[in-house]
Length: 231
Image 1: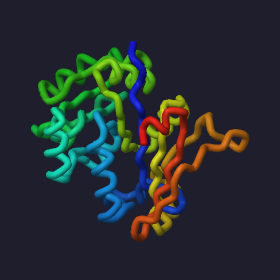
Image 2 (image 1 turned 90 degrees about the horizontal axis):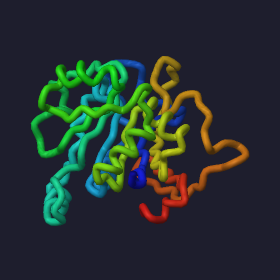
Image 3 (image 1 turned 180 degrees about the vertical axis):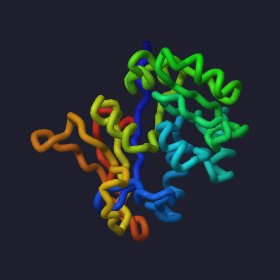
């Protein structure tokens, strides 16, 4: 078993800590300059992970957008975009989602042991389905990604995935972008949920950087001794 990947959590939220507005309309929590920064982080990663709920709600493509960055990856012997990864418990995934589009990125779907046959039948050849155990754990997912050669993993949400990564102490870095508005709706999805976190009033996380990017602010937190390796 090799080490798990260096894991970067990337998230945008409102001032009051929400990822969504509690409606079907996607909430834009960033701006063009920050989207470009995120694209650079994607280009520097070996894999990008999102939860199944994020696929259903936001229908993300999760590709490197910049043609220059894609070309630079190819020049280094890499595919144009990182591997796309998701984790599902209920197997409620639509193979027509943008995540599964016929593009240049490999796709991995992790699910509980007893759901593997159903998910494989549902997705066919559009993704590789991986047994994540029963119950599935993010640690097992990360260790399997490490075995597959993933050295840098970027996690883009949603709230449930961020919560699991943080409470299981699997994150090395958190990049948190704060948008200049409030949502004010308790029915909306928050950045993280309830849980026992390694960082608390008695053990504060290390703030490594604060950067204004137009009308948003980026907060970078070092969450493990491996942070310096990933910068």
